[in-house]
Length: 480
Image 1 (cartoon, helix red, strand yellow):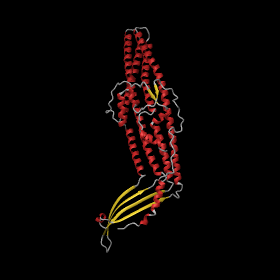
Image 2 (cartoon, one colour; image 1 turned 45 degrees about the horizontal axis):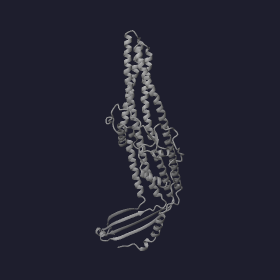
Image 3 (cartoon, rainbow, N blue to C red; image 1 turned 60 degrees about the vertical axis):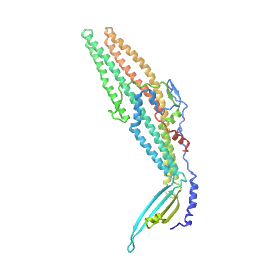
Image 4 (cartoon, rainbow, N blue to C red; image 1 turned 135 degrees about the vertical axis):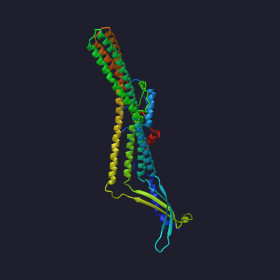
């Protein structure tokens, strides 16, 4: 049995000890990430909050349940489970987590077990067999933190994929809600047009009777007929909008139109009476897109560290232990033992400036990520401010339109009665009927817009997803 000389391992021992000592201290650190991206956050929103608003941080992961509409809740649940964009983002998240596991495995040693059998024969000599079995191990001490930076970047990328998934869920939930509200609004507008059409047909009948009695001219009859047909022409357009909204809901929920189960003629969901409005700083932490942009900055900072570490020496420890014998039974019977231990170092001497250029490239990517993060923060603040203004103005508009619709309905009723009694001309009837239809149609549209404003506000506040508290705490406490 062959044994390695005791002196053969001595040169490797000092190198091993030196590498282990250096492995404990990393000289390269990534900069920290500013959660506000350098934007001076206001203490409160500039736009006035609507009446009934409570300023507090409240979980809004399932904001749709606050509308009290089981159909809406079911549709959003189906979309989050079967939407193709959500499924694609989930696959990306699984890929990112697997790659993070690959990066983490690079920090530890690797080991392989091998075996071989060889038969050779030379002229004039009998055939001979050689059997070998071995165990090989290697480890690269992460002296300057390059591997740790790669692992951190992969972890942060996986967390960013989770936030991106959350952003997709937020968008899908909001789009389902807005589409559903549009469907119910179009159904209401269709019913309003049908009711007004029936009223106008009654007026047309009265006009025709008056023409037959010689109390009106054919001009009035044709004017009444024109009004009826104009209202009738609105029905196909509204029916088209209802059908297209159903098709869109089928797509969002990952179904065909035939598979979509949706009762027709449901009432428009009502916005919750109390509205939870978080503060600007809380909103930034709740928004999935801002969270993803922040994680992108952190991952880019780790990429800078990894590129910088590549310019420094690399150490490697490897060893092998094996058996060699002329027969297969000789391996189990204590064949010749072969062992080796190797410590090596690789020092970049000349690369034509590629290493420094790679660091500059990663630094530029970091700068781009920071600007994208800043843009995401500013966009988040703008989204909330815009929605608050829209909600306040649409509420004011709805209040006036409701009063106008009540007045128009009363005027149309009075005009029809007086015309039947011959007290007013037909032109007044036409004007009041058209005003009634326009006012009622506007009320139905703006009612849906006010509810949709609540949906957009919940989306702007970051509602519709739940960040992982453990991952959030980890990234907030880890060096960046």
